[in-house]
Image (cartoon, rainbow, N blue to C red; front, side, top):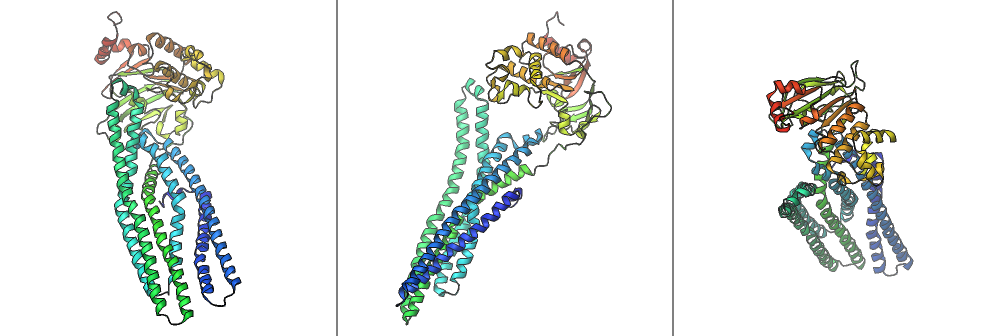
Length: 581
């Protein structure tokens, strides 16, 4: 918790200081009330007292109570502002940190966990600050001042008060030992529940196609039941606190008044009896405040364990060391723009024992079209993902425009690349905002990119054309349309290097052929790397690399590979007719 507070800025620290000051004033005003109550009791019980003095003490007591109420309202408002501001800034820092993650860090935390940490965990911290901060500050101050006030009173009262406090402390320790581990586990179980729900919603089409609704419901119910059981057991321990506290407080008051009655009966003088009775009233009030302050710990110890776990989980994200170090180079050396070179590159995914790419070397010169083909799992996508540094190679080096990609500023490196991923991704917005995503192009560039990608036909039919709405995930367009808009986005950027990762797989052969012809015409002189499963998509490439189990087992043109590479011939036999062969 203390570590997460370091994330607070000057404004939040100022609000915290103001909150502490206001709470201290509120506690002081609250604890002045028993003093005036004692004065009123003494004046009322003393014969010949001035009624004006009674009224004066009553007005002062009422003024303290009213001021305490106003200060309580002010403290609540300030802590609410502090909690909201701190949570807003913390969510921003989390989002910025996650945005800087490589795919390695994303795989480590999982998407569901990162969403939970950025939303639910931050919300738990916000609730704790707004509701528990004032209690944390108020409780020790109240206990300290109240103990000072009862010091020097009759030892019998102090003894029964100490016994009551001991009982309360025992209950608090029991709750800490029993409930804290369960509150720690609660956020992990929330992650699991979110992951199960996200998996079911993301794969809803497959779930329905296989009539697996009951299976997914059972998985969700199992995760939901685990979270519920854990929550029930934690809350069961917390529910013990309040009745024990109330019983102890009532028993303490009875004990104080019984002891007070005995003491008063043993006092001979009338004035001493009045003083003892006044002390008894004040002592009872302060003793109740001490116990109720410990009762406030009920709220703190209910929220603190969970807030502490949330803070720890948030710190894990913020303190994560990035596996990709950002370079500083923004300009390339004297080398043709668009060149890509792999030098003895090997790569394995984090946690894996075997390389998925083994000793790969090749060069894609400026304006060349280099294609990669191979069986599923041969490492094609993993290979091209190393160019924009989604991962870094385990061995070897990759050069873009003659410079190692590790030396580049990531933004400068990726601005050179037009990337169309294997799974076309569209964002909520419009056709224009998706095609123009991150490129800052003007209207005619967007239109041109849409035409090159052979998307103009269906875009013009949409309501609004380029300004037509795209729903979340692009679910209101077909798979082939999503791929063409993804291609248009890459073209719109006007990069030095194109990476098309199996981006033509959802297109029919006719559209595939027309689109590739348009790309060759409009993007002449731009280096292109194409990952494909269909030989028809890459047979005109300047160089085809054939991958098998992470190694390059053939390279050359289509005609050359048909003569020299058995793996390529096997792929060709499954796709081409005898005449084409």
